[in-house]
Image 1 (cartoon, rainbow, N blue to C red):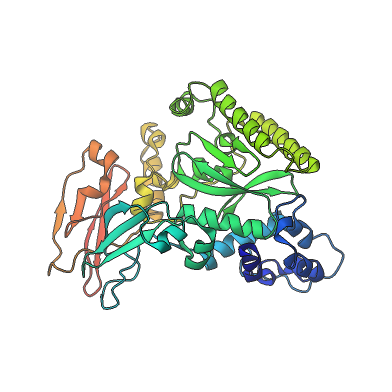
Image 2 (spheres, helix red, strand yellow; image 1 turned 90 degrees about the horizontal axis):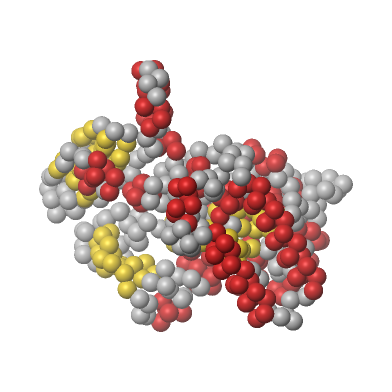
Length: 435
């Protein structure tokens, strides 16, 4: 089965050598286990990577370890390392597909590819891979057409290993299931997806975003990326849950509630929708889920509900996560307003009148964190044609990239109080810098 193939492909000794090497027989037994047991409680992986044994540790070095690994143990540590491994060595992020013409002299990362829109799945391969849609591109250099099918089949994704957050979450969730983790899919209505994994050690759901290679940082989206969340829905075959409160500390603020009212007239109506959905799921699965499993699921939901009540009233994040989004091109992240707090205008600092020193510090911080993205204007022009349009407030809010075009390619970057660009030619070096 696919789960068995994935399980056998994961280099466990490289991920958690401090756990696996002293419980090797348990791990071998897990690898040989029937997939029908995967996902049961407790997860087989939890026992296979238990780190409280008295046996000596034969090795403790992993290429995927980080300084904060000391805060994680056993199956939680395995999840942390698995997330980094998946991001670094399994999946490849695709902004645009490369040109498929072997004679094209363009770069291979798709910078010269121009979108031609989307279509539905047509070919047998696209249908077999359960592509939800197919993005169509044309090369600016040779005019060859290329496609990027947005596959949903984990089997197909295990072969292609390319995509964006949807493909990452889909396949990574399958990887987690292959290791025996209880996993649920998280849909953020502001256009992102990731997964959560149940931690048997801490008795709670842990977010795991394989696009970023990060786990257990629920503040990453609101505090780090600067997302304006409204709904985040967690779904498994057993339940569907509104998990928004895990990812915000602004739940009771008027602006946040106004965004939620676009989907439901009030919170009571919203809760009724989820209650009815879960009743339907239970009715459909009546007699199929063991009693012990149902009791475990009910206990989890009660603990989670109590946690949501607590954090919704706190208004404060436990961790000071400020890093913007890592995955995706700069233009794509900027268009989605996911560059993070450090790349946005700090209006309170500017308006506070704290003096020139405070303003200079703010500008220094932005300069230190300035982002770079390459672009590929058409080679049909012998010279680069640069057109600059003075940015209006409306343009900066809607499409700052249009303020500067190089040979027809919009490539300005929005910064505090304006736009900026650096154009670099491979042969002659920097030929334009603006701020």
